[in-house]
Length: 573
Image 1 (cartoon, rainbow, N blue to C red):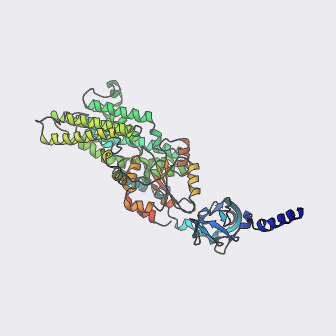
Image 2 (cartoon, rainbow, N blue to C red):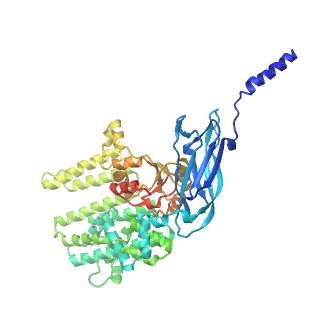
Image 3 (cartoon, one colour):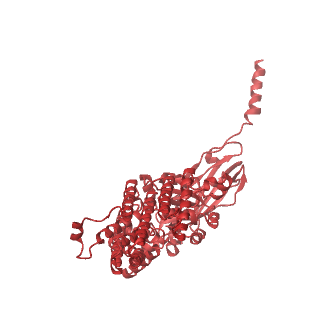
């Protein structure tokens, strides 16, 4: 019996033991070889053992410790679909081309990090592995990206300040300012300066209107320049610094006070004793007040970050030359303010004669001041509260215009009726949960129709460098679009509703992993993320290639039209 049991045991081992799967060690399953060819390309070969396969999306090749040498691109051989994933069933070879950003020739050793993961057909999946190899690179044989390298518009502007003639720089930035005056960033200043001119009364002359407008613009330019220089020197987010709730509420209150002054409840002015000390004889009224308002307007309304502003800030941050950078910003501010001077002079030139029209003009500007107050507060209050406030202003204005008065002028009553109906729809839209100022009654639509109309690009929202690094690591082999945005950013909303909503742009953006850096709260993590990529404020759009390298030449600062966005996104780096 014992002999039988021993024979049975030996037989079992022979049958079952020898048929048990034998799993290779990781170094036996994957043998990695890294060399440099005559063209200074990194040739990475991963020799696969029998029944071993390799995941394509888990492979990455990086340089470690490099200062002037970068990966240009890595050519991946063709993969096959296996178990619902793209894999390599036979030993693949990867060719990685390099580039340098310096004209100096040198020969230096670098570390190459090769990461990969694969499985055995017998049922075992190996852990992700990273191996380090040393290679020696001769930079003289590399493509010199500094010779043909395209740079972003922001960097181009910064270089212009560094190398250009001072008069040319000032003229260029003055032109930039005029172009920026056509953007929504400056629009809120139009009712402010118009209201300030109108509030001077019936005796204002064209010359006084011109001087008041000039004082307003100069004060705005000084504030803009000071804020810009400080942001450039300290690397601060120029917008966020003045977007805290208590600052927003305070400035909104200023506009409410101005509005009630326009309605005739009281006269808002500086003490006569102070005015007499700081103003010239006979023509003192209003200059100090409008200068203060101009200074505050530059801070509360913006500034909007655009390529010229960002370029000046980059220059100041890199060189510490606050004088030339500040002069460029001041010149740009004057360009932005030039149309405001025209508006101010027009308000003084076409002032109505005393009478009912004067009262109505003051009332209209008072309403505009209230709208600006809500627009400012909208950055820190919910959209529902904002819609209710806008509705209240609209209903009150339509009643003032005589919406229910049969004897009022037909034109005035028609305007009042349209405003009344829209304001009522805003009111019920807010109560119904609508978030659209243009379609306040959209909550009445069916779910299917609503879903079709409200489709937006899906962004993964992040708030820190760590979160971004995780996204970059998880999406190796894919192109990434990083959008810096904030809820209080007007230009960001423009990008969302105009550029990103364009069908052609949507099609191109589908080729990217979409990531949104939300810097609304300006936390320490958000500030660190912005600082790492030199972003002074939203909106800013950055692009990363398949190897997670930042494509600086494609960086977009500020709002951009769909056509220009398509040109950038389609251009090969």
